[in-house]
Length: 501
Image 1 (spheres, one colour):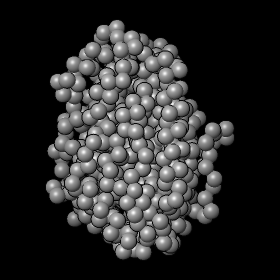
Image 2 (cartoon, one colour):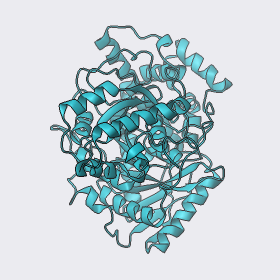
Image 3 (cartoon, rainbow, N blue to C red):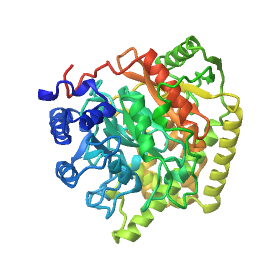
């Protein structure tokens, strides 16, 4: 394999099989990956902290005999505690924060044999659906560097899509695995709530809406990594039932004739882009051709109430997180340490009475029950992953009206005015208009998977979202593998690509 010309002929599972067979060594794979990062990261700004010394330390210590033994791997620089390496979370305030031990999920990545060789970019605290933090600068989409890879796992998505690595970690509190997968022609699963572990030093993010997993090129890589990481820690409040068989065994297994609902609604957005609508309609035809029963369905959704309650809950979580950071770190919080949107969100969180936050959570619980009850007759719900294709870099930067709102929220003693419904909605409107398809599934806790089935008229990827019942990743993997076989996507190559074409 001189020069590793065949590197791109394999997915992460395939590379691990080469290592097991002795056809390539973990050190050779690592060298190739570091070369690839050097080759294209200057164009994309996806990897914000290379970790060659830590990666070589893993090799020197000996790798576990896991399913991804020797496979290079990147960590999203948010939630993923790696002992001794800064976890900046896209924030100036946290640029010097160094975790003292690995998070449970990082431990399991290592136990799977993955060789962690760098950290990837994220927006500040993952709070917006693009990856343009002031701390490290914008990450660019390898399909068109004038566009965003979305967020908050945009660094991981750009790295995998460009061929730096075949697999990288990601997290999703409102679409942050799935919308970058859509933007970058990748497979992105948000697992069922509680499927992957949270801890030991972390709590459930955003009231339990956050789930972590990986971004990959292939369905089987996603399934095999979930087999390696799944299982809650003792004392977890949410622990879905163990699967009937390994998720990897579902890949290639016949899904049977499924009952599928599809929607061309923009859900929490206001207008679904024609390219996204066309993709949703194309999926209905694809699924019918595969023998599934497909019918159009619009799920119940009070858009304004959802946006208001979701925004309150995220703001209250952020305020509590930053208060804890100030107490633990002994360094006073200052507006100068944060981006304007983040500081405004904290001010909103500071103003929320505990009873209002609880009422918002109660409303979300009722929403989840209504949503799941309405979709109970279907095996899978299908829609576009995104409201529109990837935005241009800077396209979601605050406009003049938003900038004024942010200044008011940052500096004036607004009190309860900060949580005025119209003010909160105005502060959130553009975000939900851009990334309004994925958030309902964070609230319900259902497994939800974006597949790269279509391209926009401008040549940018457009993902399709497949959501199953709580705990039923197995159905998603069976259906996804069927679609991957019938409508393959991996042969596509972006404009910025680290390997051979």
